Length: 317
Ligand code: XMP
Image (cartoon, helix red, strand yellow):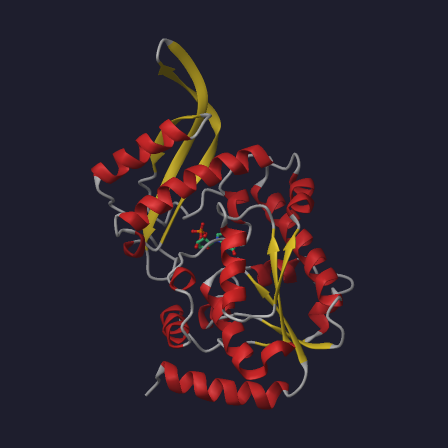
């Protein structure tokens, strides 16, 4: 029978044999898969694992600093790369969802390629690919899928010429979490909701500006911290907020306001392929809505998304 302890033991032994004294590069995302992959490889080869964590300026509030700190605390050899401005520049004026995804994928590849060159003599690229990514590679829109689609013509970036090591390739998400638990992965990363590679860029409908990112980060932070405080965070598969490209009329004191609308989305799901909107308590939604409107300047209306997938997707873009 499969047990996480035994998986950890055999995987570490296998990785030692496979990799030997070679250097390995791994892109961390802050999510559970890449983090567990990094921990396993770290246990096998220690400081020969070079982790790269890119700040694309589209992460949640304080996420880059917080997660980087956890990684360092775990003893990982990790480099945080601030590439915010490069992503914002590439996104400037883009409104089409696929164009935004492509621009983000391209900058990510460029940044990652540059960073991987700084690791001399690297032989391997490690990835946190899990079993559903392998069998459903067509429907998975993860970073690796993005990378591949843009580099199938012409020269591959150098890091893609590395040999690939994917220690989680046979596991389902719940098994990855069990392995992470065995390895004492930070609770905060272990039970983290899935978060899309293009991040907040696909939750800001229309064009991206740093100002919009800042607004959405505040809204999202209020929503997520209230879910955690109320014990609801682990009851939903994924939650987040969308910044809509419309303004609506409101009233504050004697003044008429004309400000932004945000939509909150929380879903229950097993694998993200189908999903139901989460039936969060009305009182909870009322509190979150009040807090957002009171605290986030520029937002005067909050709506809750009650669509299931299909036909609606989880993300709005
Ligand atoms: P949808 O919106 O298609 O999302 O119902 C299903 C799951 O996939 C995530 N998602 C993405 N993940 N890059 C990613 O890495 C993407 O472009 C992307 N689009 C959606 C979404 O957050 C949900 O977990």
